[in-house]
Image (cartoon, rainbow, N blue to C red; front, side, top):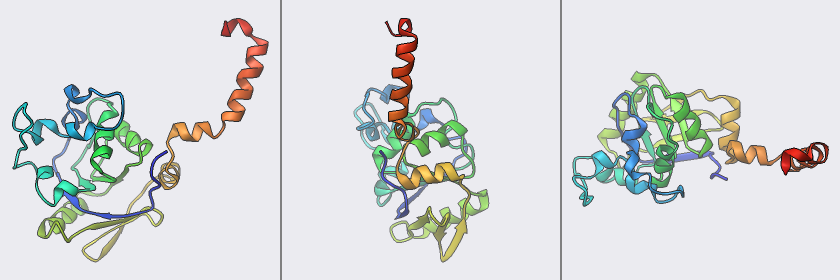
Length: 205
């Protein structure tokens, strides 16, 4: 189960490049764990560390206060492109990211975000840039407020509507993944297998 997603207000880190791919979010060498926990150490590792000793790169935004406590990221277009690695979303979640706002998303990355309780919000480029410019004036104080039930994102005194399909919205509000939704029908699934095992036992031997 994921944490139910209702309202969230947090520090925003603008990373406005287009085509930020999953290998940049977490390089393949950082995918050493079976667990989803601990992957935050490898988040943006190529940019975040100066060397193999993991000396922090002071120029990288997530190493700078207050962005070390960012819970919302701003990306450009085609966010999360590249391979389908779910580890990228696990690393974002492990770092504490609750939402990613971008001009557009790679479809698999977007689906992985929803399955793992991260809200992906697509907005026109001018609105994402306006948000980034407002945040950069005072990153510690200029928090962005997101209300999923109302489907709005607020900053600089504005409330901007965003679109999200009903099913992903319901999953996020309830804190469930596709697997969680399937397991609601566990009794029916077990009943089917019990009947099928009796009817076609050779398939289960």
